Length: 416
Image (tube, rainbow, N blue to C red; front, side, top):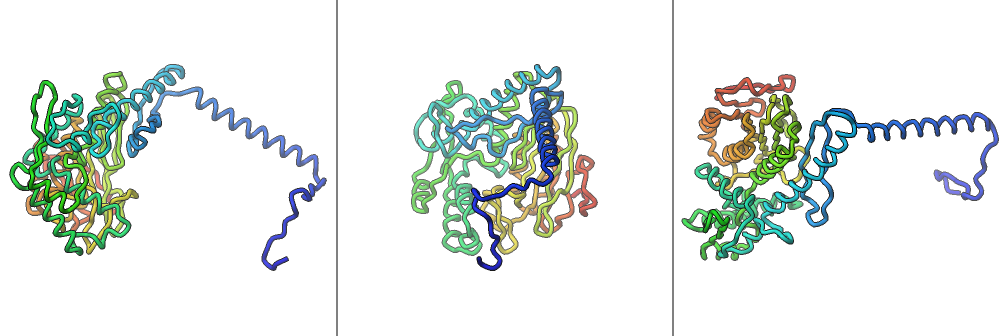
């Protein structure tokens, strides 16, 4: 027998002591009673529902296994237990159906049987396609809302380059700040997209929902030369906003009016009769994410909190003091730093909140504060944190009281 090893008898030679046999029997019986009681309590709680908020989980779907990833839905139910259980069943089916449909329609990369979706459009440039109404309205609405904002759904090629880089095991080696080949690749795609009529979505017949994605020969040549394979047309950070908007509308149509939807990327949308809720907003200091402030939301309000740092999710890294993240701008300015942007729409326009948040990430540093003021005057509550002052929350002058800083963490609110 080796020193330091625990010797055990073979299973067929294990001996059971006969000492304290009565006490052992009593202890065993007590354990059985406790176990049965715990099981009974758990069963009672499952079978007898009380009024309150319940998390609704989307059903599994092997044809789109990631369709519910990063989305959370809580709904309030009142009434008798039997009524609540029936509402749970109906809401789960409705939520799953709505989320699954809009997820597939707005997917820029994957096609699905029975669907003409955004990926179909990307894979058939130059062809006239009839789109489902939901996809047609989302694309035309996004084009209208983003015009002149600096953020474009036609910049999918640039987003593809960033996405390709963000999820590498060692992205720093290929970052444009250090890698001249990658810098030339990024710049060539920026320049090609900036050319007149390089890429556009042409509405052929609005009534029939027919469109055509037109790509210039020059852009096609650049994309082929630099092996850019991602989607050209991509809603980017607006995609989740259109998903939540669609799901919210379907839930409300069916009578589910108390609750809220959230995404891991930072979107929150309340159902219209949700009277009150507080939302913690993230900040970043000393190399770590932490709660910076909270806002009180009610009656269907929406919030978009975009950030340049990770809260445990992939797709973020830092190089030479510059944060890299999925919300990187499409302007070609590779060294800008904006830590976080918070846009609240009291009216519940989650798409407007997402557009304005994305636009701030596109705004040059010397224009950021003016744009923040402009957004506040446009009916939303707007705030942001800049990298050179990570504990100061800059709020638009009309709504500084809407953002409650966590002073114990050293945060404060200022007006630019």
